[in-house]
Length: 85
Image (cartoon, rainbow, N blue to C red):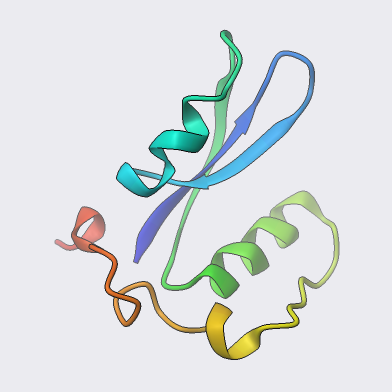
């Protein structure tokens, strides 16, 4: 499982990104004054986006690449130890 963060910039733009090193470059682009407004854990990109869409009340998230998007982060070789207890 990996943590994911939803950031809100002062101008209202949002960034949904993986916590930790995989999201460092994206977070570096955030405007000063951006706020972390929500966090969630997920085992795959598909799970993260499904939870994000539910949180935003945007309906059901779908993908054109289910085989890739449903592959767990661990199976993709990502370090998932940030949430291991």
